[in-house]
Length: 382
Image (cartoon, helix red, strand yellow):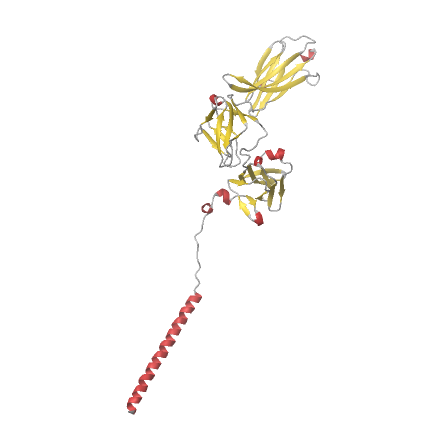
């Protein structure tokens, strides 16, 4: 009996020892796992994203932002639509900034537009904006070397801003009848711009009354510019207007009237002629010399004279220009300078030289009233 009891106690002691050892081992292994997990720190690495993948170059590099309510800012893109009446504030990053905005504001801003340069940005504020203020707003960095300053073309931002007005579908214009010149060597634009890019617009000719087909190639429409005619021809001259359909009203709105004139004149220095009122002039007579230039209707021409008795004899000079039709419906600008010599004296006899200039160059012509002589002159022979 004692032997059996001793044997039972021995077995019980062995089971207790095995259980304690396993418990210590499990605790140690758990502790080792906790230590490894606590000391090992995993750093998450994200792939690098290039600038061009995050957005367009214009948006990422834009200097121009709009100030919103509660100190929020909106980086501006190609265009923006705003409601009229609410003050608009734009900011452009940089310590020396230049601005451009619709030319309408220079004449009719009534102190609504203000620009102020701060330490790190320039601020443009337009109060009470209206449909007429629709247009492109741009800013750029100004680089200065001493007193000479230039525009940094690589640091420029521009946004076209629509001030949407349900009662003004077209951007108002101070001109009620505008002349548009059609040239064979470059596109022409009928500038009926709208205040909302979603407005449907059509182009119409008055005589014969018809709507002009817009196919997107020969004639296309851009709400920021108007109707663009890619290859103008004489058949397209005439009176036109644009029509816009409102989303809230049944009656369409009509734009300014446009007169399209076809121009076909060579580009280059002025084409000039000179003529005296008389080939033979006697003492005491009154005579005049006329210098005439035919050219592009929109190209200004300047005149200057050299003549006998210059600085000693009084003369009167009158300049004028007007549009004329030449050929089959071609429109040309005729510019004239007329010199009048009163009570001719001996000192007035000699060569009268007219110099004309435009942006392409200059041309000289001359005439001598007595004897009769008229020919173009090269500067080297004067």
